[in-house]
Length: 317
Image (cartoon, rainbow, N blue to C red):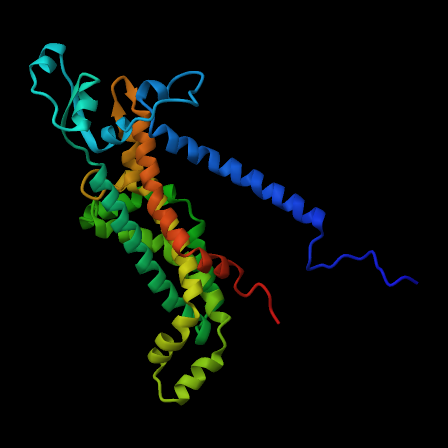
């Protein structure tokens, strides 16, 4: 008998399988990236080019969308425009080319800052509480632990619209409507269930012997958790933080219902960017492009931890 065999390894894929998988990944990447590229490109079009049909693939780039995003403008008569002194800045000249004058800054900058504070604040709080809770469920004997874990998970199953009115009435009574604190607490309550379930899986994979050795060396339980468990769970914390941040960063329903001014975030504000005669699509696209940057940068920085966190514990010896 020949030493050759027709069997394939269950670990190493065949060349044909690799080519098919690569083609599928490329197709998926193109499908996912094309809309994002279209939004980015639209931010550098003029309003007429953004609504041209058929769509313009070749156009002269313009920063009008970003100027309109960060400023408020008013349309004036040709006589009034002629009476004005020469424009001092390039964005003034750009606005005057449309028979408009810049009246002042827009509210997008403040809405963007609100998104940063609320999203990162709730993520830090949710991951911290989730890590502590997961450690307790993983290391101690908690009565009705399985039932409590299912109850925590069930809060994630409930659609937000089902509790929107009660939360609105409660926030109005407590004075938490349109405040950073109210939005941070709400997003934390939504995200903490996800953080508990993810972190429990990571902490379960950390051998108890590490902590027992630290306790024998004289560490307290809190010191062992801080100096032994947390460094081992850093990958899981990073992965959990990314998922929590994505939810808090993109959330629209609660932000539209509970905020209107002081604490309004970018998602409900971007659709309200109204231009002359309809939506100012370049400004909307510019706002969406800038809104993507923090979450992309945060994910890229932690991409190695995210990949390791998703596959953590998948292969057991």
